[in-house]
Length: 222
Image (cartoon, rainbow, N blue to C red; front, side, top):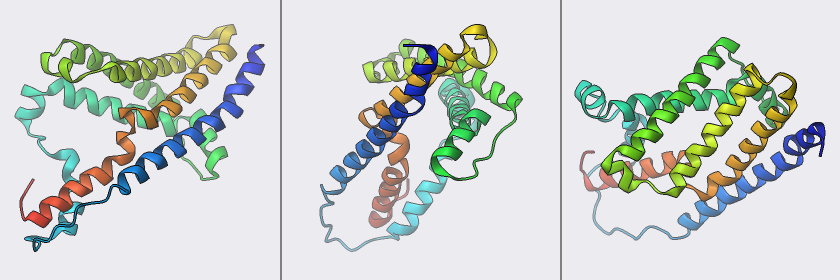
């Protein structure tokens, strides 16, 4: 298969297949949980569950963000995790090439960030991912909580970031092949998300909202 043929394959039919698998997989897992139902609670609510659900969603990202918590006890997790998530989300949607792709798929006017900002996010996301992976492998507690799923996901995301940087900076005459591999790995990630713990970003607001709703119903804080 030529480089152009491979590019056309991963850019069109394989990408569409990946998106279908993603949405069907996410929908299946969502309705599977939804159909389990919630046991009826006959106790009278002691608080406002809906207010607490919204409050939990809004303030959850900043819970525990004290100076001691961030810089003394969990600096690598907080700072590295923040840099990685901001970088990877920004790269996924706002890099000029990606923004044009999402415009083509959704028809929405996706904004584009300057190339220098894209480069900064790419290096920070890739570097923080490496640091977080090493920290996870060496930290005694995190090591026990980490399985093959996390390491495979980190490897796949790391390769996507690396090939993206390679394609934009150092590919040279092999640009089409590197770009095609970059897109192919991204397609694999899209397929993999519904079957892995990476799907947490889809269910985050639902799970956090339910925790707040349950706390509000019981009249307790969180």
